[in-house]
Length: 625
Image: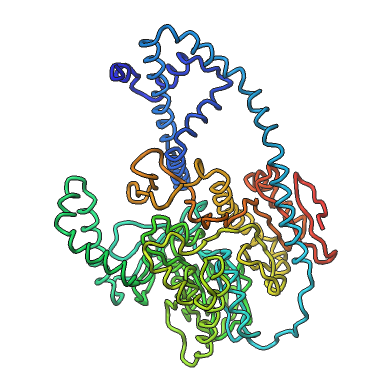
């Protein structure tokens, strides 16, 4: 008898919301809580619709899909209520009384829930304070006295602020005192969307909270572009054929034996076909950067690059080789691969961003404009090299060629990779003596559910010169962003404002994704990875054959079978900058103020003059150590 009730529903979402709330006797003051509860009941799909709304707002549009989804969910409430009235009239009176009473009891229930949670919050904060005390003591530990390096660095390398880069940076810096590394957001400050050659789509290569301001495409006369275009087209056609419902069974029947060979090959030999996402097949492409279909001229390119170099704190004393290392993860048979790639690049690898910025910095005309218009002199013999840090294997793959006579640099890179793998081997359950072979095999094993631990363990974000942290071992738990307060302060702290309104928000997002996936994996995580089925190509996963869309991280990314690999600690931010500059930025940005004052994260400043650390909370600074 349900069909007749559905047939009687209003034709529009607006009319249904009015009719349902009236018939279900929902008080106006309780509607927000009631609607929120309905959406949490289908939290996965609600989250997907919220993402669509977010994207629409970034593009300057609007989206009422959440309104529609709420109406659909409310329609089920109304239909089941009417069905109950029709079929069980003897119980509807008692049910109606219980239904209406819940709204008047809501505030008391919430208060009881808060009281019940109070002990847990005490333990939560105690765990965070314990972590902070150890971190703060290390930050105030004097750095070892090292003679000032007046000569030119032998190598400079810029990595993403990702916590996995912290391990590799330490390993690389330990190879030689003349090596200098920097931490910077992995999209390298390029607010771009990228149109792959031969593809009919563009993809964002920047943090999710920003809208692309520039477009990047490849020149049609690039060597290898036509080959890659035809390859992409073939892949797209086969993918479309395999996913059309009527053709699916015939596709399997026809190509089953071919896939059997592939399955056997992967199972027995684990052949590695390279990074499965976003590769450009080693082609040294030429990229065209446009703003509203107008190609950027040399002056505009130099202005873009000058801002990036300033934010990197890399404006002088350039090495002969400067590596710009994006990052990505090399895993097989992994629907969650994007969660292991670069959060600053919108879940892509940082390959395109590294290539584009390298091209700009190696252009002689851009360098001339930098010198003339921005007072940034890049020596003629300095060469920028694009690279990709594979976070699963800790290999650094060059995307553009190294200059000749740099064998020592290659030796340093190789040794750093081995050292980083040895450090990570224990957490992965790989014996130290087998760390190289074991970790490489994990990245190629299509049955491996834990190829790497991603950003598990992340807990703090340090914004300071590298000299303040180079002597410290954060064990892959800290995001590290280089920052020079003296240079930035002379200009009114524009770099600090950018860091606090972009990288700090993204690191908070990552931190909360891990925290909530551990705290309540049923609601905010995606359960058992082994049971996942991909939905709609890239929407998400089901755990099994249906149910709600699963969001967040799977258990295998958080737990090793014996213990949690991530402690749910809210992000602790430490900034080496004056208190007034930080406070002014918080006051100007409501979202940042809400994060600080509503206990989503801890915001501290490092005061070198007094050798103390202070915390900003609800407009006031207090000394914590």
